[in-house]
Amino acid sequence: MSKGNEGYNTKMVNRYTYKKMVWVDLESPTKEEVQKIMEEFKIHPLVANELLTPTRRPKVDMYKNYIYLILHFPVFEHKHGDGNEQEVDFIVGKDFIITTHYETIDPLHDFSRVFEVNSILDKSHIGTHAGFIFFYIAKELYHALDEELDHIEETLENIEERVFSGKERDVVSELSAIHRDILNFKQSLRLHEEVLNSLEKIGKEFFDNAFSYYLRALTGEYARVAAELEGHRDTLLELKASNDSLLTIKQNEVMKILTIMAFVTFPLSLIAGIFGMNTEYIPIVGVPGDFWFVISIMAVGMIFMFIYFKYKKWI
Image 1 (tube, one colour):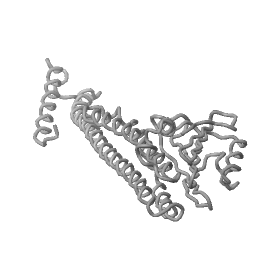
Image 2: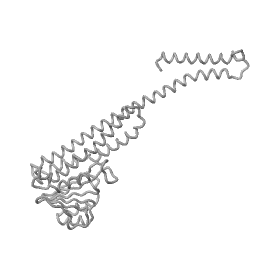
Image 3: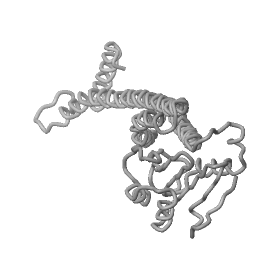
Image 4: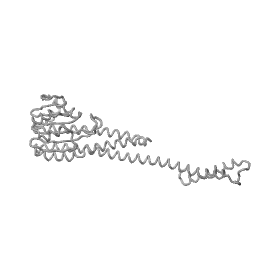
């Protein structure tokens, strides 16, 4: 096996060979680099043009001598750009594979190091065509999503602990943030199943029936990630419902206390208002100890209201 970037003016194009197969990895390629790739591997100009800029939607197309595939993978913990997803374009021929991306992608970098030392290829009986290299790269990319899912799971566990320790208000914004992450994750993967199913159909025609087993395995990797993501989403919804219920209970308790205070203070204010009226004759007022008579009436009213609330089980 050998590695190099002969004929290119940047370290962002890496070339690996294994037996008769070639893997060319391009990161943010220039027009000149894409032009050389197009001429060497007879890539259609429309496909070559798409390699220059990111594409919004995943897709898979079959050409005469290769399959062109675009997939987007969500990233939160190990991102090297501003977005929440990373695009990888694959051009998979019988004896070559070209990968294009627009920022550093850790799983691809890790796989290239393994590829260089033969540690996975010699032990895994990679097979006789470049479709197997695509399989191992895609599998590595799906496995890398486990770390992103672990990040979501750890965040949910932290939020759960705080929800049930009386910090309901503190986690409201965090629940919204993790909900956004899960939605972005799901949005990035939403078309993978459709693309992989299409790839399985055309892969049989382009390679052979035996290779369809590996393509089904990739669909299984996607299904595993999607199922785990759905589990995290269900956990989030349960946590959000529990947090909302606890917040509602606390708010109801506050409203209950304020209402009781209003009911208690209203008759006292009424009594104070009556005895503060500027009229010619007010009972009790003017007799010795009139202040304490009024205070006693208020105290009796408070005790009566308290007993009544306890009887009604309002407090």
